Image (tube, rainbow, N blue to C red; front, side, top):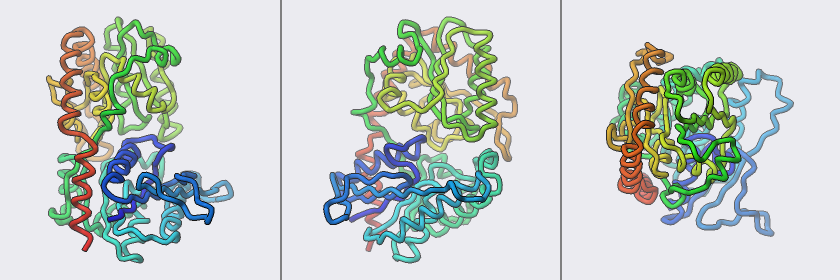
Length: 411
């Protein structure tokens, strides 16, 4: 068995949960079978042998695809669309010898379609999110968003198996695409590397980024996007108690507009409250783990989250969680046991925003204040969160389930 994973993100270029998923799934699958990865970037690991052919190490062969788009005269917002299509062509013009193709996010769907039709391979598609439920992407892609909607729908209908990363995502698939055969949809959760994501003592990393290790803090880690709800959290700061720090590890904004909105909101909060640290970039894993480990509370204010791997990362590092009660988060965080879930009333149609954003901000702040004021409760939730990660979300079990699904498709 040799699966080919097609993906936008792969180390060292990872900025979201889908990239984390592919990285660790590939590592664990490689203990069970030979894995091929084709991705966006200049990766080629390990280096080619003398005859120019990439060699396989630890049962993973990685091949990146890079493009020079500087001479393109189409609109800038379409570069990601046409760049994805060109890379997906590259994925296929380098001959494919795999037994099946497994695609991750719309960036790789076209490559999977080409491999299925031209090479006769079974197509597996993991749903990390659904484009119809991310209407704010139109701010970034404009008309290209309509293309991603079409591409995702087409790939879903062509897939021999669809993996939903949570039961909530499975329900979304049934609701948004009721014509998809139910027997093709399988729930396999995201996971966590429990050897890597474990509590560490690294106050030096906090000091490097301007965080005082001697004072408690609430932490956010994620991209600056409507989906992650970061602006809701920043607006909640005015309702938070003054006795703790607020650390925002937030970068990779979707658009200049949301970047400007974030900057304005943070500056307004900083004008009225000390102890707000904004780390405007995506941290290396080692530093991110240190931030999780020293935090008293981790907050995930997402308005859409098919799984929410950041909550699992925080739990594995023994940190209590405050999160919005949406999507797959409800399958990761157990309310009152590993953290607190905050209800959010949302619009039933695009853009699915909070119907009362001021109330949502106050409720986020209230949950954070409750935990920050009760260190014993935080510690209890931290221990329960780590244990839940150990019991239910190991990558070993997830890789075994994924391989088992592969084996049902390869004759």
